[in-house]
Image 1 (tube, rainbow, N blue to C red):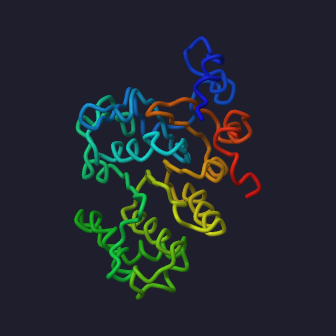
Image 2: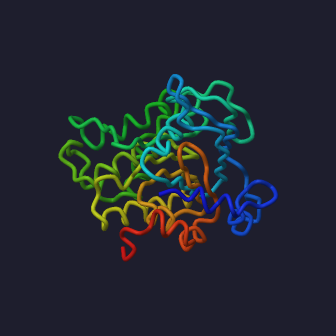
Length: 271
């Protein structure tokens, strides 16, 4: 099911949807941290993401929702420099001519991939220390202090400190993946499907922690299949369909918009 049809009848003069004009006022407040303009990603001759405009401001949680195959993960990976892209990617207003993982990490961006990608035969502590390796290489030798900060966010990880990552529960593995990324002291955390494979109660706990990261000076770009959960914690949202932004607006307004409810929130309304 697509929401593209109704949107074609609801265009504002600027070319953006009427819903966007009504919910966001046509402007974004705060200092822009990440900006994508005319952002495109292709697999050989197939364009998976095309002409995306997206912005994350300091202190914001922004989510990208949409159906499977819409290009959400592709968009996130390309923004992190894992996939080649065209268009403009800017951090703090500075264009990054050749986005790459090292360049993005150096500028304070970290990614938590879809399947966590932990080192299963290493302890929780060692996984966290690896997350702080870039900072250590830069001469910042306060990994232990940073680890204590991560333990304040995820107390359960402190309890599991010597335990092998492969023996953790699904929720604990997700906490460890986020904690490992936080060891790099990011300003922007990109999260890909953090609810994947988790029970509803665990999803709520993980996203509750995500919603609090702004208190630690971390902005969040969240790609999530669970649209309802994502919209409940985000400030703003983008709906991606067939590789393009079909709709954007304040998350609280999209959460109650009939088009979004009918298309994405029909399952699990009572959660």
